[in-house]
Length: 381
Ligand code: PLP
Image (tube, rainbow, N blue to C red; front, side, top):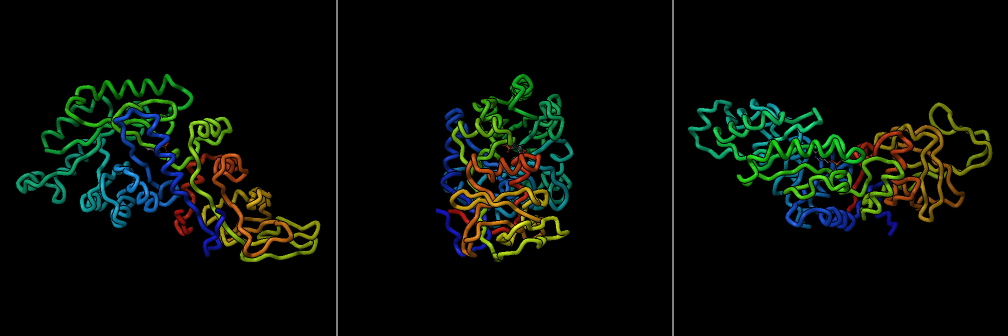
């Protein structure tokens, strides 16, 4: 179970757990509701291509990323089907979107006109070529005041789509929060549903719910839901209460970060460890060095604060500074180069669960996951 697989330092992603989480999330939605897997930012650190390949095999047909470049990476890896790009795109990004059949998130008339006219950007030429214009998703700002057209602008955008011959795949909104303040979430949902009401009978799909929306039951009867963080079994915030809610909902973390030392030393009292001599040995200790550091996403803030755990659950403190490519840990005397350790553990109750790490760093599990560097090998089991 706790295999090292010929690597000194790697992420292990449990695919059955991902499947389990998809099924749990879908089981809380209406039977007709489909799942759009949000796999932006390298699937929150879990590896977008590895996650997408697995989910495609599990029947997931919709994916979302943040940028055209992320979408291109998926297409180049052979991922077919619907890929929505949440972020805005200009210039070469639009070229990539068209070349790789990615679906944009539209918020302005200007974008729609460019989309319809691509690649010449003269509408007349495009229309004379009579080529099919690919579909778009239109985003309505129902109260987050970030991206999205204002609800009252939606009719103009919809009319422009008809005029330009741009098919509308779906209409969406995004919740500013869907956890603590149900009145605000309901207001957003109402604003969205009123704005889209005239278009429902045209067969345009609707979606609103992110992970919190699904757990709290907002928008789970629409055509699609868009979970990100909970797909990976991570809580949206690291509080113990939220961790408990997510666990009781039936979700499970899918990722562990596993490493074994590349050097183990028995050092005498008086020695200092690491940059800036921040740790001094008071007694003899065994110090293990691991080939991972802040360039891998192990935050420098964990200097003198982080913990690695053994397979048996022994907690071993990170001592001295976290370097770019190395950490030093005070370990049990019998530690070998072959001894595996959990850097992060796929267990809600572990001191190195990603939620615990987020708490230690005063951030959220999203940032812990998305900080996991591209250079870390990812092993899908
Ligand atoms: N939908 C949109 C538009 C998003 O931007 C995001 C992520 O930020 C999600 C869905 C997924 O959110 P979460 O990871 O909270 O489920």
